[in-house]
Amino acid sequence: MNILVNGSPTAIGRAVVAELADSGHDLRLTSMAPYEPQDVVVCALEHDEATDKLVEGIDAIINVGYQDEVDMGATFHLDYYTRRTYNLLWAASNAGVNRVVNLSTLRLMEEYEENLVVTELWRSKPLASDINLLCAHLVEIICKEYARDQKFEVVNLRLGWPLVAGGRDDIGGDTGTSALCSEDLGRAVLAALESDVEPWQDIHIQSTVPNQRYTTAKAAATLGF
Image (cartoon, rainbow, N blue to C red; front, side, top):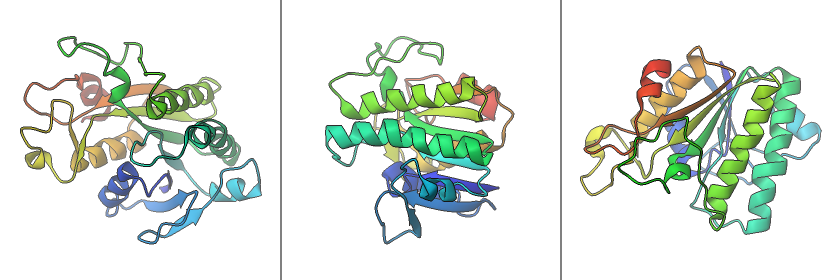
């Protein structure tokens, strides 16, 4: 499968690229700026020929729809995660891309009390004061509209935090109750690319830890996670 990874230089993107390196899939990495450790196709994601060319021959897109490690500035941040994301998905729909895996965050559900069993049916509660969460919420809305129009299938993975390099044994006791290890991230993304899913699918992903905050029952049923 030919897969485009948008946002590959981000922490989540780097982890996905590393975990999928031996998956047998062909990865095309893209970002708005060069990133020397990766062979990145630089694209501004405008509504133009460059974006159309970026998605040529692509079967699926892994889109990093949330990041909190880079301060882009509110105006650029909003523009990137709304207009430019829309441009990418528009080009993808015209190019015949079959599936998009959007990597969002379970922090959209963080405002709910920890003792509640929060499932994918619950409404997300992004803080308007947190530009990163607001943008993650807006990306989900854009992806959902494309899925509703049957342009392609979308698996929206809301990821636990913090992201811990390695396997479940590398998650320390002080990491929290919503942690996600990179090995589980890789497993979830691969399953999201290959499993039979509905046109739009919200799925919560975190690693199994003591007093686990979020249920992953749907991930188990849908992705075998």
